[in-house]
Length: 142
Image (cartoon, rainbow, N blue to C red; front, side, top):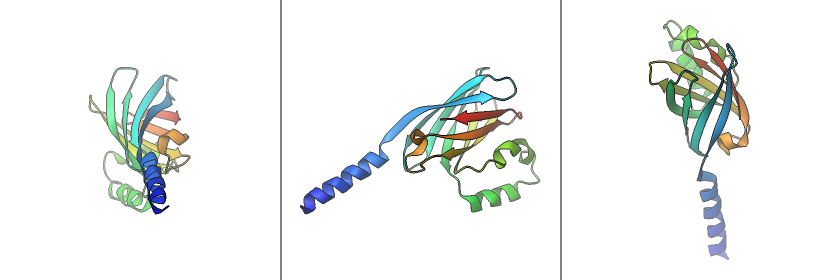
């Protein structure tokens, strides 16, 4: 009986940490062009994200849970930097996960996501907002 309990617990943990992947649909506000962000994650750890803009620029980065205290410290410490004003749309979104993706042409995309179930991760669905360093805003849903 004890072995059965251990087996059930191990199976549950394995299922929770199994990797999953999928698509996050996005629409660029300025010109209504669609993009897809692909995620690959193990539910309890950070997700790997990739995206391609309509002009072909490719982005890669990680999503992780949003630590409100750390986020507030980072925002305050970069308040005087050149980047601080470029991501105002993202800074105002009340999400529970954040991501930074670097592009192969020098641009950056910052995102915040409101994931429905943080334990299940992106596969549970949600909404979000991303902003490209050139100012374009992307509404996302999954």
